Image 1: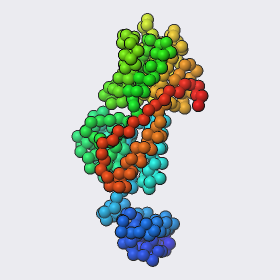
Image 2: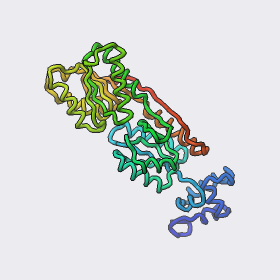
Image 3: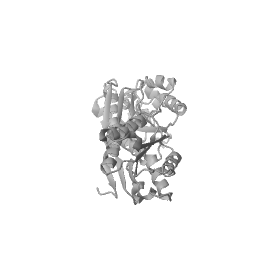
Image 4: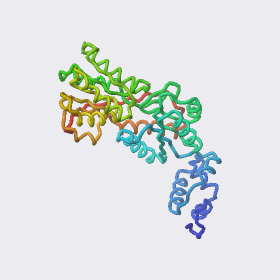
Length: 337
C-alpha cells in the first residue's frame, strides 16, 4: 500500500515527500544530467523507501534509457555458463543495471529472443551466438550495443570476449604428448562453431609441433552440448584393435559424458586411459583415474566483458572493435590448489 492507501505509489507522492516537482522525480530517475547528483540520490532513496515502481515505457518516452542488459546463452545446464551468468549479473547489478537472460540454441529461437529483447528496449546485449544467425537477428542487433562472448560470428559486433581456444587445446594435447602418449583421441564440437574450429586446430597444432605422424590422432566431432554424442564417441574408441592411450575433449558437456562412458566400459585399456578434459567442473571430482582439466577464468572473462559494455553504455561511446582474450590453465585431479 502507498502512503495514502492507494496501492501503487506514484511519482507525485515521491515528489511531495521531498518537496520537489513531479518532473524533477522523472528526470532524476532517468539520470538526466540537468538534475544534480545529490538530488538524483535523494529521489532514488525516497523512491526505494516508499516502494515506488517506475513506469518503464513512460520513462523511455521521456527519453530515458532501459536499465536492462540481455544475456543470450545456448545452454545453462553446466557450471560453465552458470558461472558466466552469475558473474555478469553481479557486474550489472553493481553498475545499476539488471541482467535478463535467455537460452537460444538455434537460429530460430535466437531470432525470436533477440526480437523480444529489442521490444523490451534493453540497453545492450551480450550474446553467445549460434553459428549462423538469421538476417533478422543481424539486422535487429545493429540497433543495440552488443558484444559477442566466447563464440565469434562475422558480421555481428566487432567486440568480442573469449578464450584462446586454439591455445587451450594445443597446451592440453602437448601435455599428453609430454607424458609419453602418442595415440591420442580428440572428442570435440564440430567446426560449424568458431570455438570448435579453433580447438580442433589446436589439437592438430600440437601434433605438428611435436613432429608426430597425424595418423596417430583420432578425431570425433559432433554437437558440443550433446552428452549422447560424447558417450557414443568415447565407447567407439575401444571397439577396434588400436585404442588410444589418451583422450582430450573440447567441451564441458563432452568431458562429463566421456568420464561416464569410460566408467561403464569393460573393454581393455578403457580404465587406464589418460584424460585432459575441457572445463573444470566440481562434478569431475568423483573420477579416480588420470584426469587433467583445462580450467578457464570464466568469472574474470565475464566481468571484463560486462564492465567494458557498461562503460560504453554510460559514456555513450560507440562499440568499437575489441578482442578480449583469456588464457586457460591445466589443473590435475584430485585438485591440489
